[in-house]
Amino acid sequence: MSYKIVTDASADLTPRLVKDGGVCAIPMNYDLGDEQFVCDGLTSADTLKKYYDAVREGKMTRTSQIAPQQYVDFFRPFCERGENVLYLSLSSGLSSTYNSSLIAARELAEEFPNVTIRCVDSLAATVGMTLLLEKAVENREAGMSIEENAAWLEENRLNVCHWFMVDDLMYLKRNGRISPAVAFVGAALGMKPLIRIEEDGTLTNFEKKRGRQAALDRLVEHYKEGSEKPTGEHVFIPHTDAEESANYLEKAVKKLNPSAVVTKVLMGPVIGCHVGPGFCAIAHFGKRI
Image (cartoon, rainbow, N blue to C red):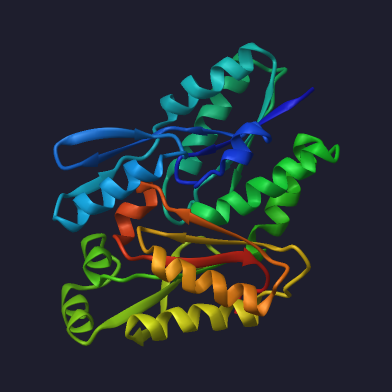
């Protein structure tokens, strides 16, 4: 039986993954001020720029998690067509969506015993998920079964490296990642926290640099140390309306590996609301340091 590859809107999908790979995302809601919007993993650059401008102006933003019933409603049409589903979720260390997907899969298994819904915890976020989704599509095209593909994802998900820089500590304070006192002192000193995703899928503020340029250079150092720089490796540079910084990182990565395929991504609101404007990162396959 064929199978569909599905993710959720916390992944930042590329048009190629959607058009050629057939990947689709379970939508997620987000609020901006008093208005509610829906994100499906592909949001236009114009919409995102307006979103980050509004956040800079002080509009409050938040997201809601996917409930089990939403998964049931999304998976059901595939089950009715007899199509298996391989679902890659946002890290369970950041959200309860993975557990909600398991509840839905168990419920639908009783109604559709001949259909498989295989849920995989990415232990990743945003473009880290995208890297895994690209491999999942390649694996399916190479003939891997749904179970073989799921096993590959689970065996290789910790090879995804995410190196993040947050520009404004107040967004981490708002989301409970750091205390108000630390945020105040850090902002006064111009400190830029560096964040990574740990093996359990949670975020860790593992380093700080004074000033934006020093933080960007440290991201490049982590890429240099963590990537084996194979020919044609795909490196993602997500950012939240920080084009100048993304361009800097792209040039630095290409200098270290001229054959690298670098994709800059204006990050969606589902993760973007938690880090705020000015965020920039490098994501690639390699060794976590």
